[in-house]
Image (cartoon, rainbow, N blue to C red; front, side):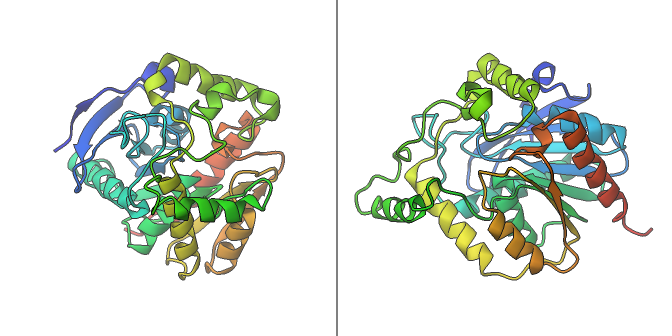
Length: 315
């Protein structure tokens, strides 16, 4: 059973009814789950991206509350306040990418244990989109899914770095170097240190400042660049998922016109192979659509909720 965990709702700016929960996954990792049990129409499961944490999605929970949905989110293993997997907590690390499915199962079990309203719906951003695709292929119990810039491929700058990423992260195994941080990545959290003018996340300075303030206030949430093992396992998971057929769920996907983190080509490819899938190209939006200017993020939430409303189970 889950036990009480801290949740910092003043920083999250979420609905007032916020609770945090510690749970142990099947493989023994302690993760943190955050809940805003404020709606009756169903529950939105938020799968965050790499480096993210529950409180980043307080604004999302506010919007879902207005549409009568509850919200639950998670600190994935290796980030937020969940167990870090290396002594250097600034390195994003995972043993196997499919280990995140243990976190998914713990999240679902917690939602059931505390009687969150059903049905469940899924919002998945970036790395959370990769984790979500695997979960959908394993028949996670949700009615529909809304993706935001899903990580089904990664962009490298320049593109020649893709081969280097594969080569270096693979050769790291015989050299026992997989725990090392990926070269040219920083120990610092990107959202807390990147100047607004050069950031790849959002056109909304207030939202970038909000993220930076959260990380300055709670430095234990911060996460820097990933390990070579994380990189290798992520590349292999994305390649494998790309080879599989699409799951049978209603799906809508939002992608910013200025996306420069994940690979849009993989998203376009998946959309063409997912019957009934909807792709929304969002003008003047970068990677984090839910952290974009009010017009953009509110449109995302409105379209997502309308999509979920249209896939309520028939009594």
